[in-house]
Length: 187
Picture 1 (cartoon, helix red, strand yellow):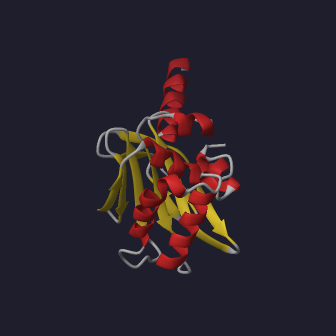
Picture 2 (cartoon, rainbow, N blue to C red; picture 1 turned 60 degrees about the vertical axis):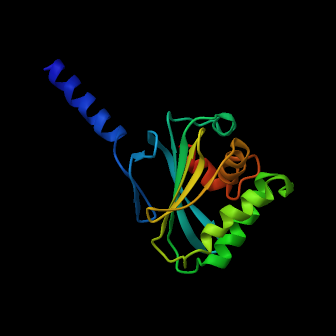
C-alpha cells in the first residue's frame, strides 16, 4: 500500500511540474523548443499599463531560477514568449513601451546600443500588431536574439550586450513592471 501511495504521489508531482500554465486566459507551454535547445517555463505574468492588461509574458530558461541578476549575467540560452492580450496595443505604443523599457534597463544610456535597439524596435512596426499576436525572443550565445512574430523570423540581433539590455527590461534592477518581474521569476 505504501508503494502504491509513493507511486501515485510521484506521478502527481511529475505531471504537476510539467503542466502548462494559464495566465489571463493565455496558456503557456511548460517547455519551449528553440533553435538550439528546449527551455523550461520559469514563470509567467501579466504586463499592466494603466487599467489594461496588455500582454502575458513567459520566461524560459535551461534551469529554473529566482535570481534575476544571475539570469541576466548568464550567457546561456533563454527566451521570452510575449502574447498581446489587449486591443489597445498597436505598433506605435508597443514600440514606445519597448523603447521606454530599454531606457530603464540601461539607466538612460541607450546610445552604445542605439542601432541594435532601433533594429529590434522596428520588428513591432513591420506588420500591424493585434490582440493574440505572439512574439518569441530567443537568445543563443552563438547567434544572438532571434525575434519571431507568430512563428515568422523578423530579426536577429547579435551580442550579449543586447541580450542583457533586452532581458533587463523585465529582469533588471529597474524593470518595466515590478509585479511582472516577480511573476516571471516564479515567486
